[in-house]
Image (cartoon, rainbow, N blue to C red):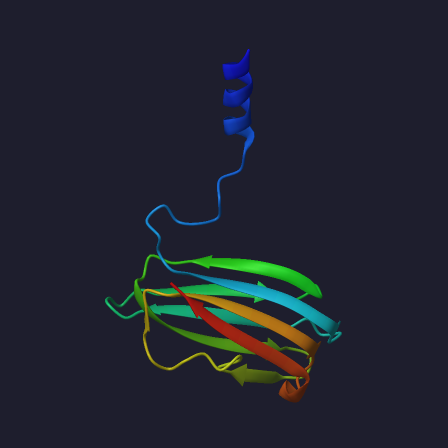
Length: 131
């Protein structure tokens, strides 16, 4: 009976959200005070520095509090992004000011807060690197 319960517990317990090979990942956390009525699209692009591979991820920012995980097999990579407000016909390149240099086998945690509007002065973006 004890072993049956243990087996059921192990089968039903979700696996952690990490790659088995410890590849870097990008985590995005949002905690906005307000959102623009025009929900923007945020295109985040991972550029593998060791190959010509490019990994685009498109997120529509529609919730005040949300989180996204971006998994990549790239050990050395660059990140670029474009935030687009369709209604205002505004595109913001390099939103969040990602580092221009290659990120070497580190994951990124990105925390967005404030008021998400086309005026970048109202949004705070904090970025942390971790091994």
